Amino acid sequence: MTANNSQLKSIFFVSVTWLLSAMTGIAYASGDKDGNFNLAEISAGIYVHQGKHVDLDHADHDDIANIGFIIGDECIAVIDTGGSVATGLALKNAIKNISSLPVCYVINTHIHFDHVLGNFAFKEFAPEFVGHENLVQEMEHNRSFFLSEFAADLGDNPSEDTIIGPDITVADKLDLDLGNRLITLSAHPPSHSFTDLSIYDHETGTLWLSDLLFIDRIPVFDASLRGWLKTMETLKAQQANHVIPGHGTITLPWPDAANAQDNYLNMLLRETRKEIGKGTFMEEVIEIVGKTEKTEWLLHEQNHGRNVSRAFLELEWE
Image 1 (cartoon, rainbow, N blue to C red):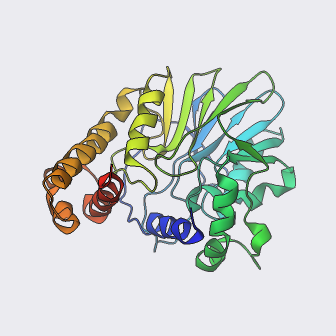
Image 2: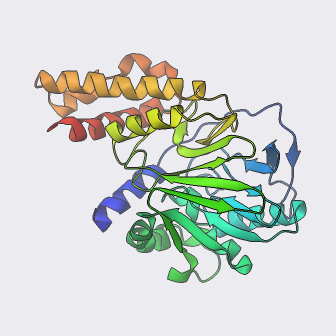
């Protein structure tokens, strides 16, 4: 993969328009200096902050991902840090309000800006940063892009040192013990991105999927449609009491939570293959495939066409 490809993937992701959605029935704990950083304890010792569904041009564009942490007896694992140093600091302050334990791990689920740019806020804990084995290269490829496009989100006088990649990488599976609390990290082949990790908490049966799962909003992918479908089949076979997506409603029954996404991705695969088989040109395929599902997904108009073009390029020579 080239640096240019990595930058193009990031550019696409951050240009997505987000719509407002509701979250109800969950108790919150506030954390930032203004008391506005809401956290939901969705299961014992597992706290999640639901990102705001706003446009990139919105002042809160750096706070759009579901991020949070898991508390063990000895230390805490943070899962994603948000899209700015400020969001990372808000999460860090929220953690300090809830627990005096140190943060021993910061786990990044993939490369996208809204999951990694808050890493710098956690340097004071001297944690080990953890990510997919491909994340080291992807962070290097995107470093100059992040610095140029997100300088305002990287604090005062940002430099390359402000963007922190992993110290520990995961090629397959990795168990981390937080003190009588075991979590298992799984690295996945190219799916939503080239750097996807999922996290499973054995104590509560919580499966943290990040952007491997989209709820309500149309799924988008940078890596492989076929790979994503295969990854989801593996994940759906895993028993879980709770599942946490990268954006949207933060705890849902599993595997039913994946049904809508599966239906969409399978439709994309099936219909794109059909049109390729008929010799239809890409421009026409974009206009034909999946138009009847326009009302089923938020942001269909903004993202569906690109999904079709990515599927076409992937399937054209299979």
